[in-house]
Length: 234
Image (cartoon, rainbow, N blue to C red; front, top):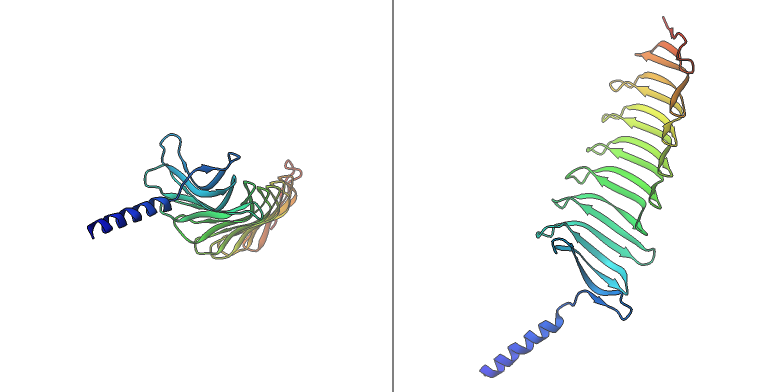
């Protein structure tokens, strides 16, 4: 009986050894294939874990910081159909920092960024081939909108709006290639009344600008000729 138990024990030990996952194998062409673990060169601490299929990442990869505690700093879920990887970055307390899709190692589509140690979204951005494209929105920690702007080819192009936390629009302006261009209106943060308005051309104030106190026009100034005398309204 004792011999049977002993040989039975050896059988299960051998089975467990064969069942262990084998990491860091190459296929016959020298490509990474199967489960894989990467390590930091200087410390030999674990850097990432994931799986390859003949040199191509598949499934979910987990990335760690360069410490023995193996804190997760990012995950990437690979999709072979569009060569993308849905990526999530984390802080040291496992809170999400940002998340979005990477295609061919470039940001693509909508990315979300979070307020520090919070589930509240701070910023949403849209990308095309790694460049900002389309609407970018910034939010207060309570979820209310703080800024809205349009981007094209990684530059501000189009409208821009800025809000107080109470919802008052304090700036409405336009951009062209990252510079003010077009009509701009600036408002008081307390009551929303217009403080000044005028036109920008290539980042410079041009033409007649109007300035207000309360709802009363108090001054007009031609910014195209700064040496000219401004007209005060009575």
